[in-house]
Length: 330
Image 1: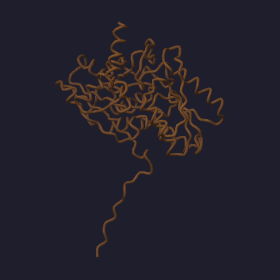
Image 2 (image 1 turned 180 degrees about the horizontal axis):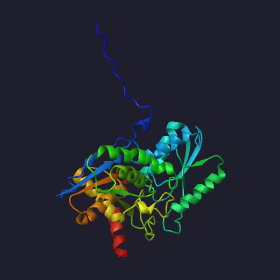
Image 3 (image 1 turned 30 degrees about the vertical axis):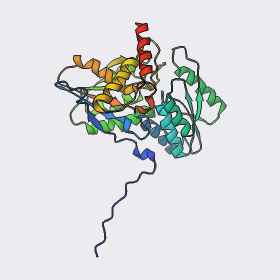
């Protein structure tokens, strides 16, 4: 009797073994123009719902390998949601404790997920001098570090392993997935780690690539004036230490209203249910396409899912209020 062939099982050791290998899709329904192709890397299909799974996994697992993080350690970080959730998953998988400093702009869904993952949620409520909450959150992080000897601040805004995660992850995957050269990369920014990591890797293969950073109106990352903004996950009220403006060819500012409309248009045409920073990328591409040379190929990064934004960009009352606020400001 012939023995049955041995088939190797493909079973991950944890949910983090499912991070990465996200697909690239063409957006021909959304951008049907002649001599134009827009393709999107669906980072929203990572198991935690966002591309931040990559940086959380890379930072924590590198730390465990070089013993700068040890099982049982307490991690501390400031996060508007997605990175906090990704770090919470890493803490669960690797036996770590985690305190996440959040602000009033965190969505109800993100807050519920963090608490469900057993995170010690530490909220701040006072806006900082730039009109956001980031500096207030960072001050609270420093207070917690002073009160918790041995705690580890991940510090995604200054941690080189942040951009390295995307250089070896999203960027490397795109370099393999794209046979024909893209002319432009459109990517949202907050820490700038993902846009820099992707750009550095892609430019090794496609040296003529131009990089467009999609920032929130009211963000100060690239020297814009501080202003009111509500969508988390894009923009910043301080300049990240990682930021390298000389590596960015253009900055496109998108306000909350246009980001929300971009989300809705993407869902209605392509059936892709994405978060606010993805909507901002859609809006930035829509605005730029008429002036881009033809033929033109654009690659976009779609960072996170839309389910955590139901009370923001997909809420009609919130959108009406955002429109009224914009009208009053102009």
